Length: 213
Image 1 (spheres, rainbow, N blue to C red):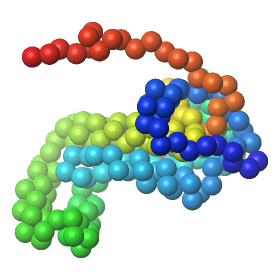
Image 2 (image 1 turned 135 degrees about the horizontal axis):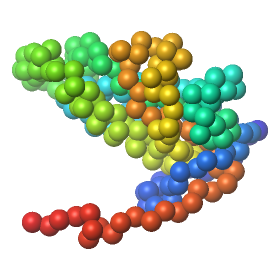
Image 3 (image 1 turned 135 degrees about the vertical axis):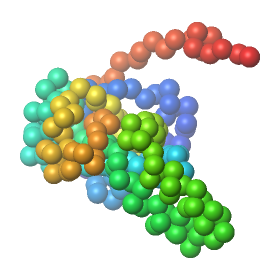
């Protein structure tokens, strides 16, 4: 089916109009080019020392979605009717990309060479000596940021999403041919065009969740 979704630059509509959608139009497909645009927008999210620990697996084939649905038995509908499901992981060996990230920053004129040298001198030993549990905490925060940004970017492209935490996290990496020790799961995000609108939900007032000092 021809893609008929409408993009928007209205940020209020993007944030206040976003809903978690459980049922999608299975005829709507997202092209590889458009999905790359969405992911590129998501990866503009901030991360600690710009280490970008997030990794994505896009499951778009019917066979892939059927396999995935067996690992998320309570979320089968949104997986099977979606245009795709994006599995978000963190790469626990993300420090391997440190030289590339800082080197490209210098090459592109984003960072002076002396700043790069100073940063690497401080960051490399820090990451090398960071306990695995602390690294996991840092990476999971960054992955949460990119996941939320992904959903907002998708909304700006006219698509709906649903973050899914209910699935077999101990099996997902291997099911997607990943090293489960290196790649740790964050969430699944279904994406497509809603066939049934998501429900509005109550949010606690700002006065309840905020303290002013």
